[in-house]
Image 1: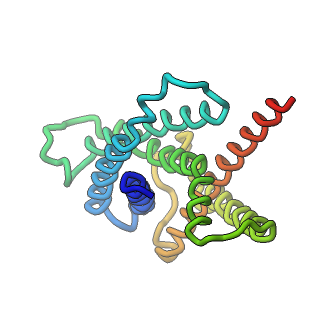
Image 2: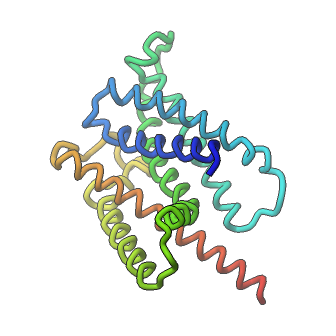
Image 3: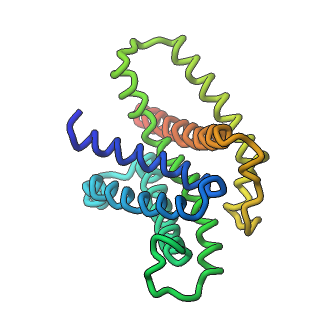
Length: 230
């Protein structure tokens, strides 16, 4: 693995960790939340610089169903991140307080809430499209031989995490409400459960969407191969 790939992994891992910190706004408070958001902004820029070849190749090659899905997700995620950054700067009371911005706080607050939860879902889906690469790297690192039993066990574990995450998304935290502006304020109490369980729950919810996009990409690839064979 070369240095560039290691740097890409480090940046992506940093963004993933910061995503959970940002989701725990009620636990961290304004000051830490803003600095975590600023760090996410810098890592987001670094991510696109490191992956600039993807942008340069957008107009090249054939668009398979998987590539169409990936490109659509990437542009939606870019829109969510830009919405978060703009609204975050407008709402800032610490990191960007020196900027001469006045007004627009009410609209920025609604945009920030909407973009944050869509960003969480879209980043999870984006990660799922690259999950095969992650699994391959872990398998090579641990030198695991191919095993049907281990594969079945891992899929069973993934299904369990996915179901638990779906329950948290739909019922315990009801995050779907924020995606469609059914709620204007955060409804759950982060202090009602231990902080560790808060992060475990959100990790499971991320796992749900990782599983969905990974499974969908596998189905699209299988469909393509089947169509080619026919």
